[in-house]
Image (cartoon, rainbow, N blue to C red; front, side, top):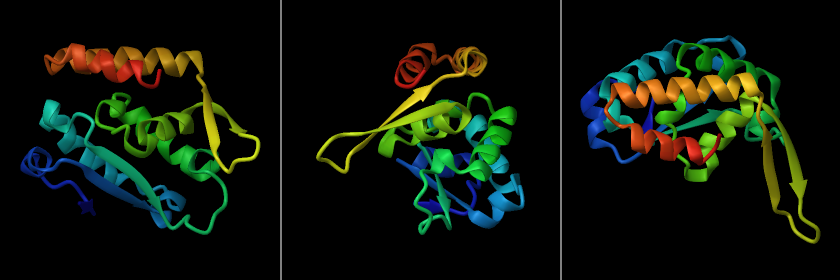
Length: 158
């Protein structure tokens, strides 16, 4: 379901997936409020929010660049990460969403396969970001009595 905002814990519990669109206007004007309020609800929902969130950026359809290469999106993601460094607990791996958001925080390389349109993303982690993501995720996982699943999530992208 597409959400303008995640309103309450009941929304989180009932959803299999929470598709959250950040508009180009929000990115350009650095309007974080709607997403931050939704992340607050997800945090309160704890385990019920694990791996349910897809963050999409609306308004960049005609931009040929990949999301993780667009400077204003990278800046937007960095600000959100500064406030919710355990955001990856909530992000799903569907459509590589977790990896794409992680790539916004780090350097990355794209590899195009010969005779194919397929492109492979290789994230080159910044060691400080990698360490902080790991530490904050583990802390959050412990606080939710969900350490095993948190470790499994970390193994998928860090």
